[in-house]
Image (cartoon, rainbow, N blue to C red; front, side, top):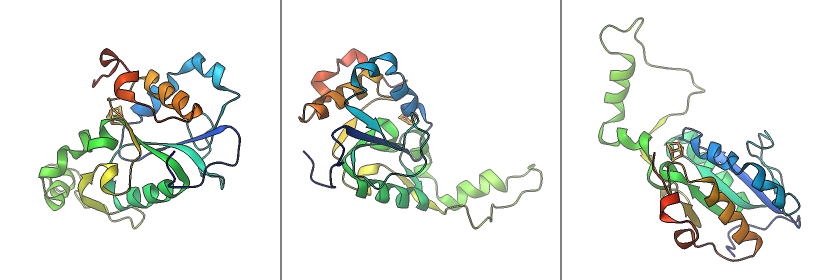
Length: 192
Ligand code: SF4
């Protein structure tokens, strides 16, 4: 449905997940699908995800890429671009991926001021700025996913409920674009 990347050669729907600046709560909600996964086991396969503990994406194309969290540093940008390139359908999952979420509360404060407050404030033991070269530089602002790469679908919520993930997967299996606004009742969408 979304010709942004090649589909998986597997007859099963291949699903991968990725977490950027998030709390992993959206991943926990995906895991809440629980036993209702049983009737999908012959139709889907998980690539990098909390179900498999696979750390690197396979060389096969990904049908659905679920991305949690916004972007707070340069590594997040690299990871997101690489993930986008592999995924036919990229889904921004939850408030952080869609809007920046809680991490974006820092956006009104210059990074230098944030670092000063966090690491050099009076009274801290051995105050110093982190200097490890492996630490990725912070972006000036926390960005939502769509400001860096094209997004095909969104699952609103903090986190989106398990039913939203299931509705998304069922729609993709049926090869139609899910309408989360109508398929997920309002009372099931939550921001807590
Ligand atoms: Fe966590 Fe909510 Fe952000 Fe998901 S949207 S990563 S549950 S804070």
